[in-house]
Amino acid sequence: MFLYDSEAIRRKLQSVLASKHGRRYALVAFVGQDALDFVAEPRGLIVYCWDNVSATHPDGIRALIGEGDYNEFRPHKSLGNRTPEEFVRELQATPTFHLSAA
Image 1 (cartoon, rainbow, N blue to C red):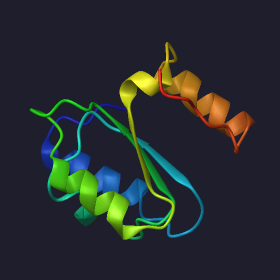
Image 2 (image 1 turned 135 degrees about the horizontal axis):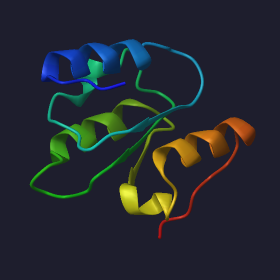
Image 3 (image 1 turned 60 degrees about the horizontal axis):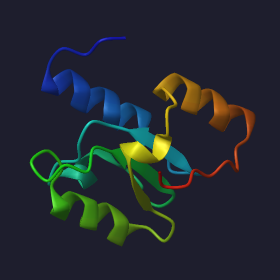
């Protein structure tokens, strides 16, 4: 699936993150200042994103972490050499799977 504009990306993220139950994972390029606008219930969200200061807004990360008891932020490098598809397959096979920072 390819999303070609910011509005399509926004709608898809809101749809995917609409669930209010369980642990959810988001692998994104960056987090904007308005990150909470995309998440109906931030509790239990783990966000993997590019931790580059020119791309990821620190207030967006702070807001996500501050809104939920179990929220986490992890840089992309913590995926190791896995592709996003490999990472998702591992999560599906082992729901309690945790990654360590590289």
